[in-house]
Image 1 (cartoon, rainbow, N blue to C red):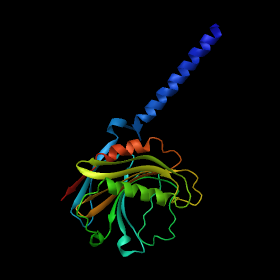
Image 2: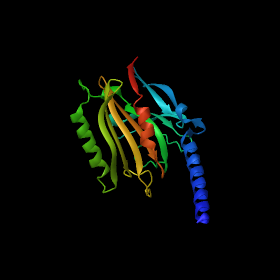
Image 3: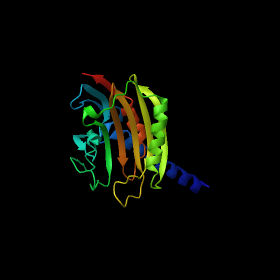
Image 4: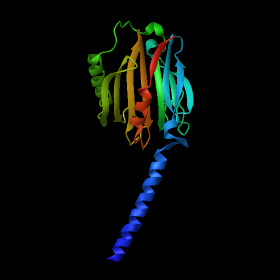
Length: 228
């Protein structure tokens, strides 16, 4: 009986120690305490009179812009990306067809139509009907090739007074590589200021994306759009 008691105590000590180590890992991001693991950044959108203020997760320590090209003249998108330097950078400046993407990604991207003259006039803000149509269109596209798709969260809400269509999900279509076997995690949001449509995308394309949506939601909910 005493042997069982001793074994139980030893097991409890080992379990408690492992839990403490897990909590310590969760409390730090790249050596920075969790409560200080966001920084405020200001992004001025190119050729516009709009700036975006957001709290960026500290692990997104690399910033670059890129042009996501399309064969449609009004399909080009200017993108502003914060990424984790532990993951590869992919800069696309032309020829969207045939590009090979890195096999993993951990990033936050803001994007808008490259030519502002292509932005359609849209005299009203997004509403819940727009949100439902967007969510349905997203699911149809992501499942069009029979690939797995799973909703994590979706809602229509205001952030800093602006309406946002918010969608979080897992999918592997389109895949980063032909042999991708795991699901990528996305937290996407859509809003606009006047007639400028703005897309926001948080992406974790890796084997382990646990806790990604919750962490990036904190960043999303900090976003403010302002006119210059």
